Length: 264
Image (cartoon, rainbow, N blue to C red; front, side):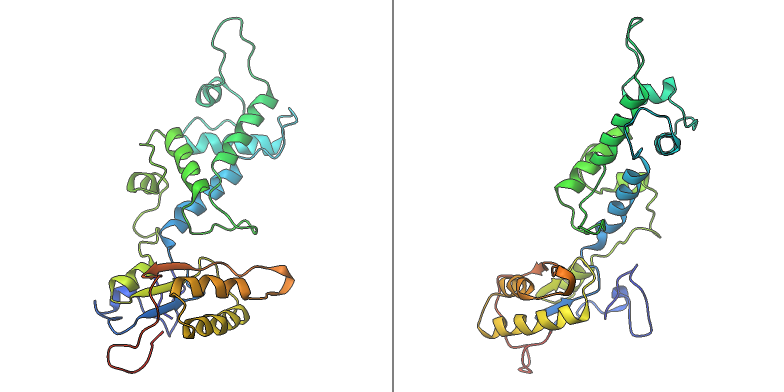
């Protein structure tokens, strides 16, 4: 296993940064399982997911209960407002819910709960059925980033850009800087097949058998990887995560440079 910056480091792992620039120059295909590739987005996705959960008042019953007060405090802390845990004028102005005229009735507790619930929903990034972030910056993550950036008055890009990561407190020591798969491509591997979720050994064993069978039938690497994942039978009705393909996924398996056969 080759570990990225924030991967679990053990006695059999090395940092990608320690490898020579041409470390994979003779490797056509690399398969990553249990090593989160495309991991530049995991940290901001986790931040968005956790913020979304903290802002959820858990009900819209119109009762200023402790979950609602906790959600209000989380909102106030996030936007650096006075932390009161109550529905005050500063909170309402931040939510855009303050009375705009002398005859306007103030928003009800239920209305504030509804606003916090809606905001919580908008801040949810892409997640799987287990509630785990996917590591893939899809439509939900873009919408969540747009919402975050708009609320904190950053340029609205929908991406985990430098300004957004900085505001989230993801400094150089926290954010995952390396995309493990892309780094392998940069160091000479032509194609990398990776999974954005940890994958059980039995599933990978099945997947590998189907994958190599299809490659021997001259299927394109990307197609073989995806079709093999769909043929895996897992326990408890779980599905094999579809692979991400980095590099030349339309290529076919070829002999390695020095005639040693295909390397993976």
